[in-house]
Image 1 (tube, rainbow, N blue to C red):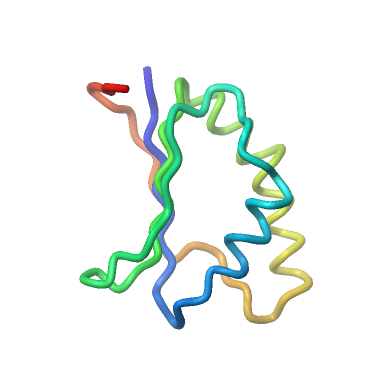
Image 2: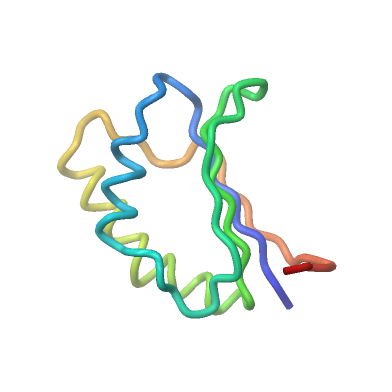
Amino acid sequence: MAIQVIQEFVITDRSTKNYDAIKETIGTDHPGLICHSAGFDDESGVFRIVDTWETKEGAQRFYDETLGPQIQAMLANDPTATPPDRQLMYELHDVIT
């Protein structure tokens, strides 16, 4: 069953330096990732990252082994970095690619 993962960061500025730095470090080729998007939702006041994964296990493995360690390193080394203010993961009923 496909999984949607959403991360939201309250907008404190319009910089994407932390997002861009992590993306550069981890690259873009991740087995099981169907779709990735990121952008500002000014109406909701957040920078939102949305990932669609083939399986919950694949998504969890990516976050545990790839993204999580990069986020922890950034949080430890950059006092301006923050974790997501909101994060959700849920099964999707349908995915059209």
